[in-house]
Length: 150
Length: 150
DNA sequence: TATTGTTATACTCTATAACTATA
DNA sequence: TATAGTTATAGAGTATAACAATA
Image 1 (tube, rainbow over the protein chains, first blue to last red):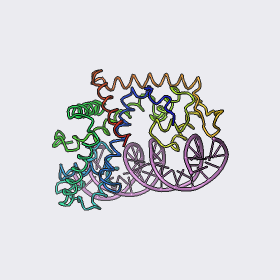
Image 2: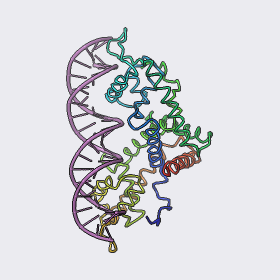
Image 3: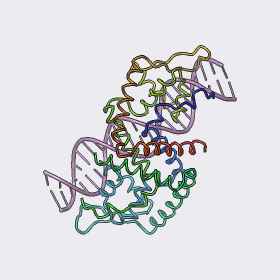
Image 4: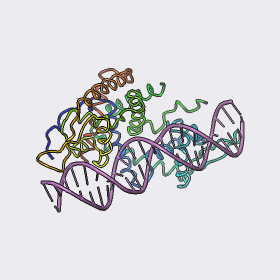
């Protein structure tokens, strides 16, 4: 492989969007590697995380928090229920909603997964100082808060 | 919609991966909005950008630069060729390679697109100072350089 | 009328594997 | 043997639209 123009900084590199995408691909691959290829996908992990942290959250509300459609959440909850990590419970007041109740097993699995992911992310981001990591997260959240209000 | 736990900072928010994903969704949506729904997708724009900046680049090399498989690039190049933005040219020395040659039209379309995207990204990121934007890009690149060597 | 969960469906992005023609 | 481009194919992830049950 010749290195002709590999060092040239292209237009692309100046876009936040492009850099965001490339970094995201790296971190996502690391995430999957951390939990193992056949384990929880990022979005399933995210759903479990919120279900554990907010027990009895409804599917609609969870979808809203995750920024996805509620139709898309069905398969995710199916998977988590299939794993025995949570159950759909009826709610006394409103018979339309399914409250997501994490099981003991789900809480344990989540605690383990979160520790693993945290460790891998820490290793992956070892080149960034703690301050840089905080800054990065702060700036990413700033983008989100801007975008979501439009 | 009740606001019960909407302000609680969940575990998820502490992960770089999660924040990266959420921010990426926002910026990508803004990108598509900038160019119009039926125009160049981000990846097609990226390919065009590199083809314009590195005329006669081969498909394999372009795929490598973009971080995708060369099989995936075929449809992208097909689209750009269909739009008359570039052409596949044979290379004297090696009859296997297809050199991507941007057309006049392609260069003009790219110049217009890049200006549009730049303006939209600038507006979207107006809450970030110029220094913050530079920092963000620097940190994202740092993640990429770490991840790609593993 | 509006909302919750659900299904069906389709589209985009991407990877893998195999092929061909060249080298 | 190895590489460039290509094709076929499959699997994620996601969105839209419609429906039944319930509010």
